[in-house]
Each structure stands twice: as structure tokens, then as C-alpha cells.
Length: 196
Image: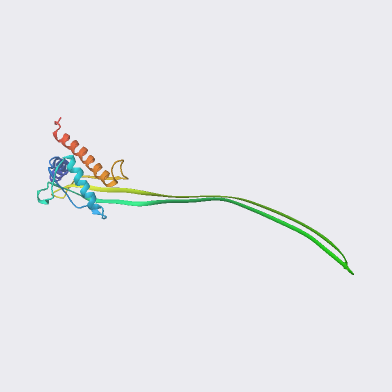
């Protein structure tokens, strides 16, 4: 009977966590681990969550119902591509003939001279070189909503190469907020749904 009761309690645990998530009113956004840009991502996340009006955001950990924790990275790098193609052909030829004859007799003289020269040279060449450098910007964050007992109630991973009107980090913060909003609304609907 004790094993049956334990199985029943474990089966109820996920619903309990979901009920806790639906009841969260005040959230503390913890410092995110990652590179130097993690602090900036935290500020963007706070701003995005504040705009959604899902929770009251607090800087006082004592007053928080839940904590948003995780890691973030924002990278700016240059991607390079180089290629080179070429066709080259060379040919050459040369020929030279010469005859020089000279005769001198007591003041008289004679001379014969012949010369011939031929030369042939061809050249074809084409070379094409491409060097492309593209500046890339990408951001990624993995966050989780944790209750006071340390139980994870919700988590997501979002990444972006930037959006049309905002940078990659701001887009990631917005994606996290939209995902949390959608999931929280679904949990609240389930909680308020009538039991069949």
C-alpha cells in the first residue's frame, strides 16, 4: 500500500508544479551565466517581461515567488569565404638562320649575307578571385523558471540571428517572453478548465 501511495504522489507532482506556475505573481530574474554579454541579455529579458505584464518583476529575492535562471551568449563574428580559379596557357617558338660570307683579294672584295628569323608566341590567361567577408551576429539563451524549492516549472532555449528591426539579443528576449506567455496561458486555462 505504501508503494501505491508513493506512485500516486509522484504522478501528482507535475500537476502540483503546474499549479504553482499558474500561481506565480512575482519573479526575480537572476544573473545569467555566459560571456560578458549575459548581463545585457538579462536587462533585455527584464525589459521584455516587464512589457508583457505577466508578473511583477522584483530585485528582492525574499519577495519572489519564482526565479528565472539560465545562461546566455551574444556573439558577433566575421565569416570568410575565399576562392580562386585560373586558366593559363603559354606557347613559344623561335628559329633563326644566318649565312655570312666575305672574300677579299688585293683590294677587291665580295660579300654574301643571308639571314632568316622566325618567331611564334601565344598566350592565354584568365584568373578569377573571390573574397567574401560577412559579419554575423547571433544570440542564444537557455532559461528556466524555478520555484522557491528549486523545482523547475518551465524552461526554454531560444536563439536568433537578429530580426528585421531589432538585434539578436533583443529578439531572443522577445522569443523567451512570447514562449513563456503562451505556456503560462495554457497552464492557466488547464487549471481553470472544468473537470469532466
